[in-house]
Image 1: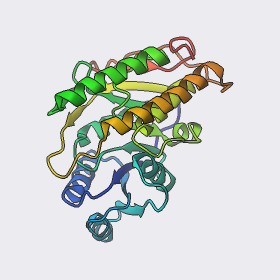
Image 2: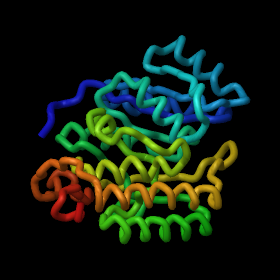
Image 3: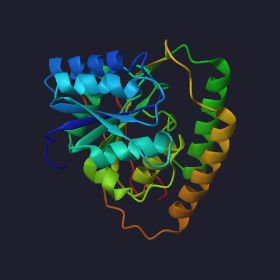
Length: 272
């Protein structure tokens, strides 16, 4: 198992989120502070045309736990997250959405699991204890279909790969470079690479709630083509790459977390 971690970097990509970004960042900060999690919150402005930048700039002047950076390169969710990775000072990173759809209490649980030695912690809304509130039925059908295809194609058990709310040790992130996708399919690229490259992964139930302010930026038709491209790349890596995957211990469920479903990404149970 790896050493204990020193700092959690919360990376939040944001585009035109002036209506909610301050409350989202402050709620995350409060929850982490109450649970004594050493942290920084890095908001990546992805070309906003509203006051997202100025709001976070003001917050960062008032509290050093907040930082805001600009994504001046290619626009897109994935590009913004990668910019956040490059700017993060922590040895662990959790990716959260600007619209407050992710529960900060789950970020605390991510931190606890990472400190148990896991390289990655993935949240699922669709296992026992997981919650998805207000999920549009059409998107829900597309979500379950997409995740079914991912499981069958890549030979994994994780059933919520498209959920962007995940946490990683910085060493795992660096081990998954180079990154290909500047778009929302980055949510699939990073965890699949982590699994196929032999990093240990814990899966726990998380809570998701549909945004209450601002506009939903997911474009289902565009995302399908992006997902296909990443899936093709990952499939090729799975069967033809020569990455040296580490030999990992057998999967075990943590007795202190009875609801946690733990999955180890090893060459034995993932077919890597």
